[in-house]
Amino acid sequence: MSSVQYYRPTKIKINLKAIQQNIRNLQQHLTANVEIIAVVKANAYGHGDIEIAKVALQEGATALAVATLEEALHMREVFKDVPIIVLGIVLPNFVNEAISKEITLTTPSLHWLEQALHYKREGALKVHIKIDSGMGRIGIKSSEEMKQIASFQAHPEVDIDGAFTHFATADEADETYFLQQVQRFEQLIAYLRQKPRQIHVANTATALIKSSKYQFDAVRYGIAMYGLAASSYVAKHMPFALHPALSLTTMLTHVKQVQQGESIGYGASYCAPKTMYIGTLPIGYADGLLRNLSGQDVLINGKRMPIIGRICMDQCMVALDSAYEVGEQVTLLGTQQNNTIHIEEWAERLNTINYEIPCILTSRVPRIHEK
Ligand SMILES: *Cc1c(COP(=O)(O)O)cnc(C)c1O
Image (cartoon, rainbow, N blue to C red; front, side, top):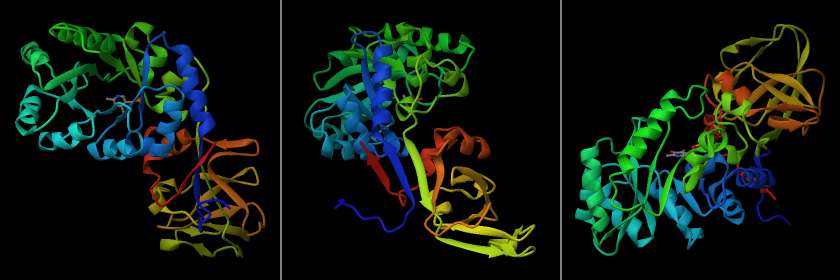
C-alpha cells in the first residue's frame, strides 16, 4: 500500500529522473572541479525542496542554496553535513540560529556584518560576501566598503568562506551589461587579502550559455535543474536538451450536457453557443490556477479543450468535444498522449516568466515524486 492517500485527484507529479538528467547534463558541460550549488529556494521552485535536494546531492551537488533562514533550517533537519547558504538577507539579530545550525549567511554590506557581530554569541560566523556588480538588489558596491570588509578576513570569529555576485542580464543576447558586471565584480574582489574558498557568479543562464571562465569555483544551478530554460534566448542556445520535471493533472469529477444559451460559472459570463458537454475539474485559483488562466487549454483524451467561464476558488469548467466519463484523466501541465502543455504557455498567457508558474501552484496541491 502506498504511504500517503490523497483524496482529491488533483496532483503535481515531479519526475525525479528528469531532475537527475538535467544535473548530469550540467555536469558534462562544466569544467572539471567546478562545484554545483543546487538552488532549492521557494520549495525548490515549487517542486518539493527535500526530494529535489536529495537528488541533487546524489548527483554530485556539493551545497544547497535557499532564500531564507526558515528554508535553510528546514533543509538542515534532513541534510546534516551539507553546506547550506542563504542567498538573501537574514536579519542580523538571528545570526545565532544560523551559527548553531552551521548555516552560511550572505553579507550584503559592512553594516550588516557589524550588526551580526554585535548580536553574535558563540562560534564563528560563516559568510559569503555579496557584491552588487549591477543587479541593484543587495551587496557591496564601493571599493571603500570592500576594503573594510576585507579586514574581517583576519577576524577570528568571521569565516569569509566565499564571495559572489548575481547577473541581471545573463539570459539575454547582448553581453555588454553582463561584461560590465564581471569587470566590476573582479575589481571589487581584488580588495580581498586572500581568495576565499569559493567564488561563484554563475546562475543557470551564465553556467549554460556563457564562457566557461565565468564558472569560477561553483555555479548556482536553479531553473534548468527543473528542466526549464532561463529565457527564450537561453532556450535557443542550450548546450543540451532540458527535461521538464513537473506535470499537473486531475480528472473530470462531473460531466453534463447543456443546451444552447445556458450559462456557466460566476457572473454567468460564459453562455453555451450550442448544445454541448461541459466538464468540471477539481482545481481552482486556490491551487494556483489563477483566474486569468480562463481560456487556457487542458488535455483530455490527448486533445486540447479550453477552460471556460470564470475559474472558481476550487473548481473550474471546461468545454468538452464530446461526452466523457467522470474519472477521465485531465492534464493541465505536461504531456498526455502526443500533446504537451508547457509551463511557458501558461507564463505567456499570464504575461510572466516560466519561473513564476511552479511557484504559484499552492501547497494544497500535493507534490508526488516519481523515481
Ligand atoms: C535564485 C537565484 C539563483 C538561481 O537562478 P536561476 O536563474 O534559477 O539559475 C542564483 N543566484 C541567486 C543569487 C539567486 O537568487
